[in-house]
Image 1 (cartoon, rainbow, N blue to C red):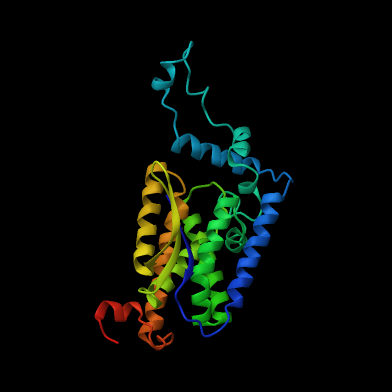
Image 2 (tube, rainbow, N blue to C red; image 1 turned 60 degrees about the vertical axis):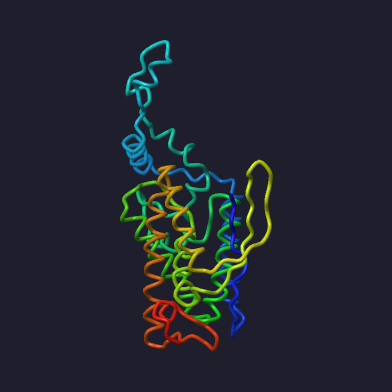
Amino acid sequence: MILVPLTADVPMQRVPWMNWLVLGCILFFSIYVLLDTKEHPLSDSELQRIADYLEEAHPVDLKAVNQYMPREITREDVRWRPEQVQGYLGRAHCHPLAIHPAAFHSWQLVTHALAHPGWIMLLLNLLFLFCFGNAINAKLGHVIYLFVCVAFAVLAGIVILLVGRPIPVLSSSGVILGIMGLFLVFYPRNDLSLYYWVWAGQRFNGICYLSAVWFIFGYLLLDGIYVWRQAISIPLFLADLVCLFVGASVGLVLATFGIAAPEEDEENLLQFITGKK
């Protein structure tokens, strides 16, 4: 099943050109990383730390493996070695723009959110940021919106570092979830137009509409189930949760003190919960 937001039913008081600029930067740097054919070898110490992590996090079940082997396999035979790590990660994740917890530089807190390691993830994240970011840019203004995007990128990077998983990360999902947290507060009942694609013996696809509050909580639920079942991307998921929570908290503060007051015919989360206009 595929469910992708396309547009939000939000009247905008200004053209959200800053969000378009952010989208353009992400597209430019992502294409640069994905088409970059240069080798970016990791340091020996970084390779060793990642190998040690993989050995501990994904141990091989020797008993199960040896049932089908002509000779007994030992732990040493299946141990992760530094020379295997580079190929396992792929070229994009090893790029200097990624955040490297085992070889960290301060500028990676921002650059990791400017690129993606795959075309599908790039396309999906661009659609998400276009749908939610346009409305938040129009609401907060261009300078504040840019500051918010950078702040969410740094926050996501800090969470990834604190989790302690040494594998490099490229993703702008923390920025997008932070923006979605703001959107949840400012426009919880506004409809999103969603493209759906479902395969159930035959293909069903088209456009449907859903309130933002239900889409965002449904997205978090499905994302959590995917991470739990696949046991991957845990640092990214935690960073997404933190950014969503901080985004919603900042939005509530702005709404409470009237800094980002609802326009006519708008209803923010506080009004939605209390029933007051």
